Image (cartoon, rainbow, N blue to C red; front, side, top):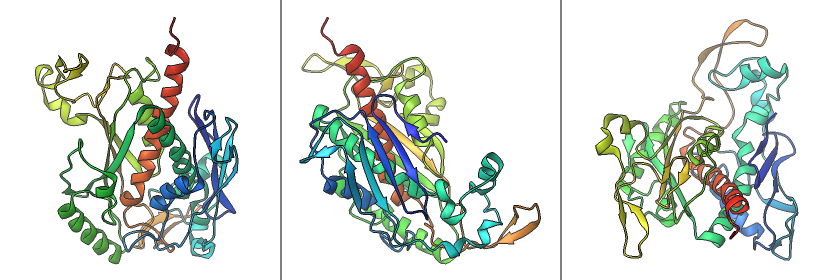
Amino acid sequence: MSSIFGKLFTISTFGESHGGGVGVIVDGCPPRVEISAEEIQSELNRRKPGQSKITTPRQESDLCEIVSGVFQGKTLGTPIAILVRNKDARSQDYDEMAVKYRPSHADATYDAKYGIRNWQGGGRSSARETIGRVAGGAIAKKILHQIAGVEIIAYVKTIKDISASVDQETVTLEQVESNIVRCPDSVAAEKMIELIDQIRREKDSLGGVVECVVRNVPKGLGEPVFDKLEADLAKAIMSLPATKGFEIGSGFEGTLLTGSQHNDEFYLDEAGNTRTMTNRSGGIQGGISNGENIVIRAAFKPTATIGKEQKTVTKEGEETVLAAKGRHDPCVLPRAVPMVEAMVALVLCDHLLRHHAQCGLDI
């Protein structure tokens, strides 16, 4: 399985939903970066289950253990191992799903590829795998902020047809975390929460869009032609569970404009820096960051595992029906916010180190 991400700053995640635990090995981290378990835990707490009435009721503290790579509060430059133990698995809830495939889930495709799967909680295809990504992303965030002052903020932009109004220049983490749906628009957030709670009671699910803005991005990040910055961001986001779409800048709406309408015209600011009057490029041109805010959007489908009865087939090839048991998010969006931030941080940190390795020398 492909469980390693990155080239210089890499993560390798491990573990299954109902196994002994999940975690990550972070390699390529520079030495002497100040990091604590508390900082990593803060990010994991935003991702963990059981946060509110609109998330899965599974109760996991998701306490992280830094097993290696950190000494006296600083990274050593050696591999960093982080472990989170599973505490509240209910494997018996998945007995029926051991033989019945969940529609739109990974059950059938895992069997088709490997001929075996851990059906307890989805095993490796469970969103609990993202714990390792978020833990590694917390370290990447710290490096980015410490070296370049980079700020990464994601939030729920839409749930179904409810859309939020958010100022990308001024939105803050405090605004995002001010409600259980992680939408900084309080009016839209209230409507989202009400709709998700309604769908939860109906044993159904909803999807939506997470938007992410990155501020104070250094110029020059990205490796054309095959590792363009937006290409690596797209791969990172689309590797998250339940993702079905990726946009940057104007995205698909940009196809409705002419070239003269879409182009970001240049100007010189008071300090003589080259800037763009608009940001339809989303902070990246030619696969390389231009110093403007990076703005991306990730589309998440409705949660596949639902309590409503649906048609399916068994592993033995018999048609049947399934009303899935277990504890599942009626909408993944609120918990997906820190996952998106983590994947963006991992990409940018990797490219920052790659840029320094190739172009950082004063020759």
